[in-house]
Length: 174
Image 1 (cartoon, rainbow, N blue to C red):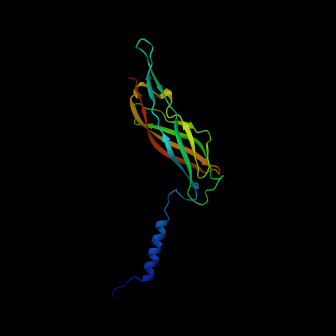
Image 2 (cartoon, helix red, strand yellow):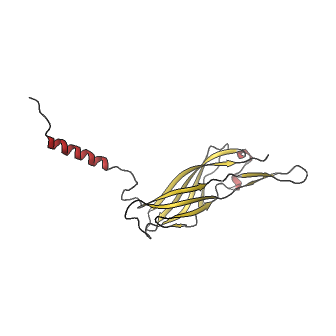
Image 3 (cartoon, helix red, strand yellow):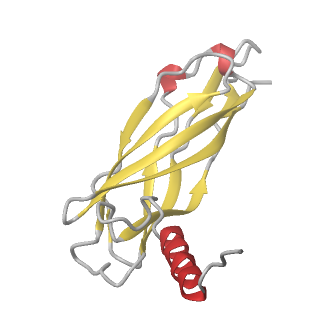
């Protein structure tokens, strides 16, 4: 004699399986994460420019110019608990890691001056993408990758980060 599952038991098991799928363990909305998300809306990655100096005799040097990068950061609410001022974000710094360049460049941290981003709004920040002392001749005419980790905290004290990558081009003198 064959035994069949009772329809009620099948429904209970299906409901239990469905509930387990809803209990994911990501940090997007667990109890220890902030009620807001930090987003990078825009990021201008201006290249390092090179200009030949004219000394009148044709033997001029080369001037490299680093232009600050500008980013627009947004404080996006992710649930109904995301209210100000407690979930406003105060930006602290951007950590910069360099890769894919022909020479090693040490990681840097640039301060963001405590820029405050209110819930549901955006704010610009600026920072120097590379230090002049890191620009050696080996880096001229190259492009590498900068991995930027923006760090801040909500006013109530929960840390918040956003990581993005962008290319940095370094020109060479003609």
